[in-house]
Length: 75
Picture (cartoon, rainbow, N blue to C red):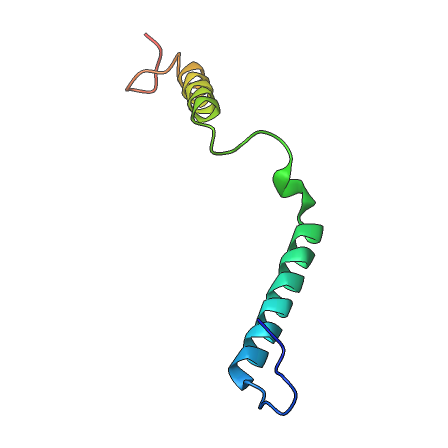
């Protein structure tokens, strides 16, 4: 982006784009300030960690249902 030269007419589209970019940048900074906790901890997209969590969850479910059979009674 450049400033208009002396005697040159202002481009209204460029002014609107500059305002929009400035507002968007401010909103992103505010969002980051309000949600600092998003960047803490493990990477949620880490496939190894995801598999470990799912495996642990499946083991916990199987332990809770361990003594139960189809009729709801132990045999």
